[in-house]
Image (cartoon, rainbow, N blue to C red):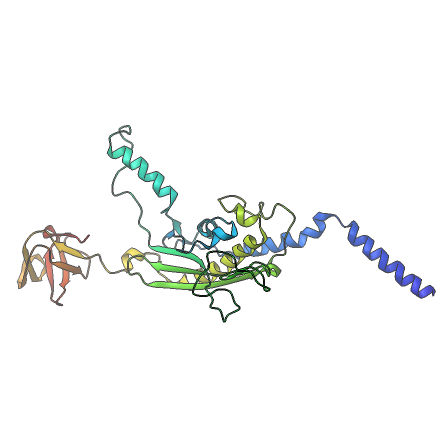
Length: 317
């Protein structure tokens, strides 16, 4: 009897201690998880190139009342310092308005806004969800859904399970010049990866509280999606580790077209005899950097190889 009473006393004391524990103490492990996940974002010692982030065609985030995942990826890119970001969205639209004012003569003299100043993107990155068929967990049929699907398993939207708080995402990065897909990485996260904090979400997690991603940081499923993208982005940067940091120089030289009639010669400076006659509009493919700043080694569409003066051609549009 005395032993039973002691056991009950110990149990009640443990329950009382748990109830009396301050909220900050219970949330501490959640904060630790946030810090650990943030620390997983890779940081590069040098830029791998210039990056533009584009939205996927299927606007899955709208059904979840989230902002575009483009904003999440931009935060990851800025924190990682792996790429130079160029804006091809609202920022570009605003810049075009300024350029329109400049071309209309409305801006002050010396504003230095005009053609030839926009930085080119080396790579395009598209954030999306993993698309699963009906046999892979019943997530969707024929691609990403435009809304919620009811059912005993909970609401599902392609790679996201609302009730189970899981997300499967994919990042695809493409070389702008060659259109080669350099990497396609998947990321996964679920509620056990983070736990969930008190109301207010992750507003204080460095860089993610603002920047247009508050809809992610203030919702359970949004937090899981962020973690999934961190997972995919980390894998992507790892795959790109051996990619050159000069994508422009490493790609094939841009094609040119003849603006004036001329000749292709066997050697530069017009020496060695003529290989063939070249007409206006013919397309040529440079194979090396220019010699003496004027003569370029080129090939034509028939495989002929020789030298042509750059005074006779222009970049193909």
